[in-house]
Length: 233
Image (cartoon, rainbow, N blue to C red; front, side):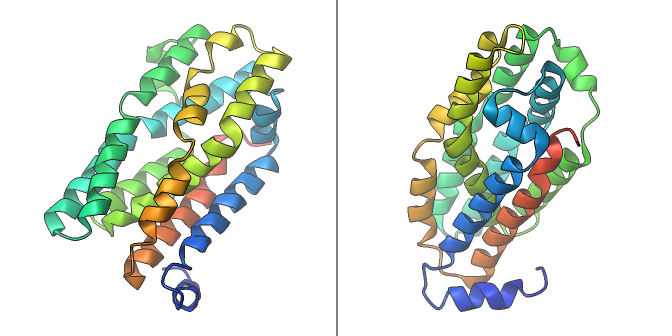
């Protein structure tokens, strides 16, 4: 737990459901951080160059490929613990929803002339290593519900930015074959619509302060880590 976090969460959770507002704050903070990041901003406004877009897709592949195992591990562990069966089922359902999404990324990259072998050999950014390490820890050894904080902020990001990015990338048309290389973004923009509201409603049933703090901490960690998947500068 980070300094001051426990007091902050406990103060907000005097209202039993007020802690969920902290997730919304982290989600909005992630979008704001990306809007201020040069490459992320170019992605959103459609002006990102081909090399930057390839970098983004490759790094996204190297974390998205683990989404199903992470969520599945957390759901099965929560089920074994016998607590919060509704959250266990939510995690397992999300694991199924994320299955195969890395193939969309490989398809997009192939249409940009980047083969699977090159993608697999690519150096992962420290942000990708931190993201996967953190979320595997919480899923397998930490508080298993914590991974929902990560899911919350990333689905909020998709809901608010993915579809617009696709429209602008196609409209600007600065990247060769871009129309055939936006499957991942387009699909997430459509699939994640409504997911944030659903998670918000479900998480309001979570009343244990330690678990609430763990979910918020994962959201905060992801908000801090995620901008690092883009190129610097």
